[in-house]
Image 1 (tube, one colour):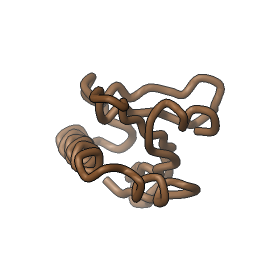
Image 2: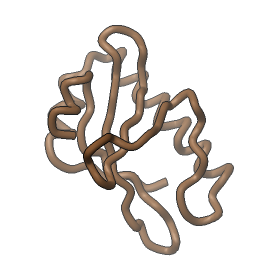
Image 3: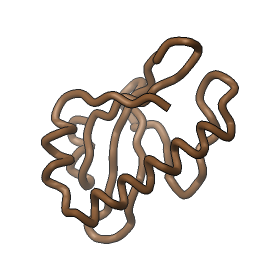
Image 4: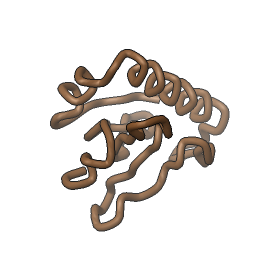
Length: 103
């Protein structure tokens, strides 16, 4: 699966602890495994462990939980056309619940 980043994502990622970066990377690996297993064009059925769902009140913005350890790890993203029938993920925000003020 192809990925892109926008907005404050890079700076927010850089502020994560080493452990948080590892947990997020593990979630990315799970996204890639799922995408490879289920890719038929479009968006696959994501595993429940990632808790991927729409962000209320923000059209086209989704959220993912990548950690339940304190503080809880969240990331927001949107899908984009990556070409050749592929769907990509454009990461918008990463951190804790504070990212939902402007996901």
